[in-house]
Picture 1 (spheres, one colour):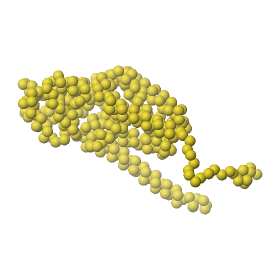
Picture 2 (cartoon, one colour):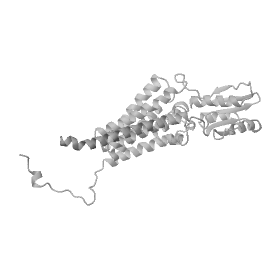
Picture 3 (tube, one colour):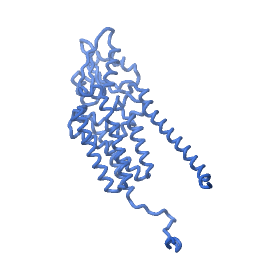
Picture 4 (cartoon, helix red, strand yellow):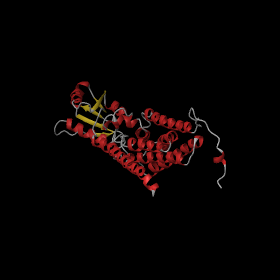
Length: 337
């Protein structure tokens, strides 16, 4: 009776703590997923303008009236604008010709942006004039709206969280933990490429390069979760999972574009593995590896830092200063009768 009465206040405090923690996580999830979606709009979106300077000047002036919406890049002609789109320097381009305006898009970069550019350019055209559109780098026929590609990043993040959590909960440390994380990433990358490329057809680039990207994304997430657990204990699993899933996924911009998210969400998202992985996967699959250096370096840094933390967590810890191990007393050493 006395024991239950004594522990009741402690249990009450724990119940309150659980309620507060769950509410905070729910609020964080709603904020992270709903706020960027509700504030989608172009912000310094790279857009090309091609043609003679005298002919393109009025169009540039009209686009600049939408302050902060577009980042204008000038090109001499349509060929140069197409090269810039294929190099991922811009999402699209408006070509001014004697016959009128022509829009170049790349649905493989972002179907949402391509639709947005069509609406914006049509609004700038003379009343009743039609603006022909050419899709320079088209999305695959199996995923014309990019929905399947966008939905594939969250499972990869979850797979990375699961691998890091399992390594930690199974008590694997040091080199064994590293070998397990790398092996899991390789297997997951191969399986994911087989599903997304060979079966679904939503990826159309080099098969092994896509498998490498998917595996590296998994390793970056898994190593981060395992590294946090090695340094912080079991609470580190929660910290890593919340960062990668509740922040990394909605901030990635993979379903739209980083430049459509509120600032600085788009920038932060590209510094996290899900955002960097989504950008790298598009470049490898649809743009022949254009502009892969930044996202590839981001994933490599996360993986390296995570694996380093796993190794550091396996090192023997020295006892705190001023403490010493005492020999057991006779009473402690004696067997219980």
